[in-house]
Length: 153
Ligand SMILES: [Ca+2]
Ligand SMILES: [Ca+2]
Ligand SMILES: [Ca+2]
Image 1 (cartoon, protein in one colour):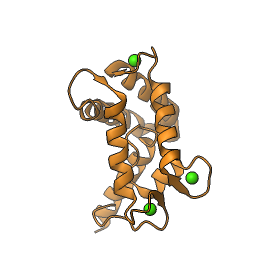
Image 2 (spheres, protein in one colour):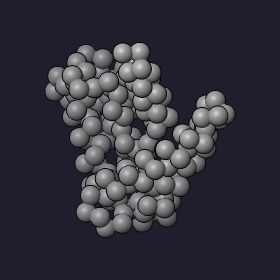
Image 3 (cartoon, protein in one colour):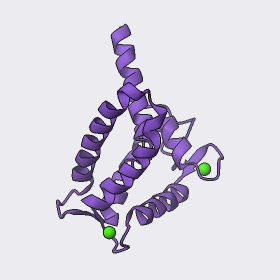
Image 4 (cartoon, protein in one colour):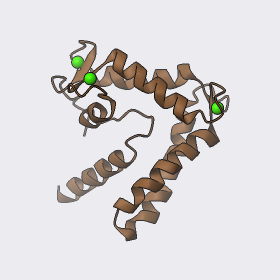
């Protein structure tokens, strides 16, 4: 049990670090914290849509409307480099290796047609899947009133 709790804690830390990882968070409260741009405690569809579009544009370094593996990974690397110093020194390298491995996996998932680029529809698809997952009461917004799915941590 204790061991399980520690594992859950580690997973949460990881989720927190991966936070702005374009895979909108699996954790409802993290999701709200990251996507609630007008700070009313809820994420509306418009808000989410605007935030995702902005995020995509930021990552699309050469502005060609697609995210290459390099653009996607470089953007993540920059943010990871800013966050790693907040971890205990002895855990940083391990965490870095793990997160870099995960970002590669995420790219492969997001690039669903394996064209080598994440297109806006692919990016949106994954985002809306996550939005729908969190909006458990199906009122079109994600808020603290949405019961957390049973399979969540
Ligand atoms: Ca909001
Ligand atoms: Ca690009
Ligand atoms: Ca809702």
